[in-house]
Image (cartoon, rainbow, N blue to C red):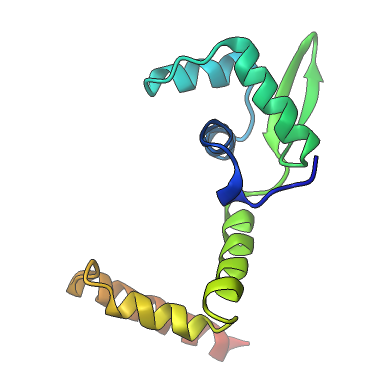
Length: 132
């Protein structure tokens, strides 16, 4: 199975990945219990099947602890976010991150507090680049 982008994973697969990123590692039982706490109630075998598919696709790995497999993500949430964002910018904004930023600035959902936070992030980035 080839590795699909994060946004193409199924809903349960994404939920399992989010839990693994949050926890660092978990068993099938841990994940099933965490999913049940969110209102889902998948069977043990369903969670196991999801993990096996994610492992074949390169999303997760496991280590053995006695007779139990402990699963963890093969890459961090930040790494996946950066990769997905880059692909999104390439596909939707012709590879130009400024076009993405322009759309963000034009979005009515950004209030003055959000814009001020963006300004601080830009200033911080400039300071980092000046130190290089």
